[in-house]
Length: 271
Image (tube, rainbow, N blue to C red; front, top):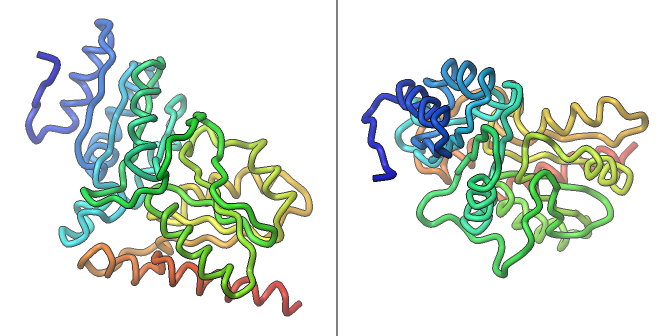
């Protein structure tokens, strides 16, 4: 009696969710991220952003989880769309444990939110043990001296894989989980900028408008900030195929992330 199936009618779903919220219910509305954040964007803008209806939208299969279905089912622009809407908190968990913690927090907290789920049924586990989830705060998973890799969603695990490869070649990297995309942790970022010589942002999203842009917006207001490298979809689409195939085309596997970072790091050291 607490579940409504509105059919393949995503825009109408947001209207129904907003109406239930106005009647005092705490509502979670969910479907593919490509449909809830793209097809329903106008309705999210009017009902959730403008009217501040207490609806939590969950975009499943974000990024390119639905890889073989092609661009129609991918969501590589959703962070940019939702992040631009005033008053909506945006989360992007690294694994299923973090997703559970975010949903628990959302159920207890007023206000519209977008929770971006980029994992599939075999989502890699980043957190092997329980941990304290602090919304709005970056989470350091590895501590290094040279480079800070700031990643979100499934790219946190790929960045941890990249860190191991880089460490073997003598490059010391911190790995930071940006589970909260909006509001971004400005104080945490400023501390990261002070301690590292290069910043790398990694996302299963267009490099325009996502976590890379959010980090750059903070960095742009500072003086003597380190260089930033943007790893993600380079403002383009790729051919459809398996998720691994799409990641390889976009340079988003652990090995390719490490290779790109090594190349960019060498340019700094050659100066």
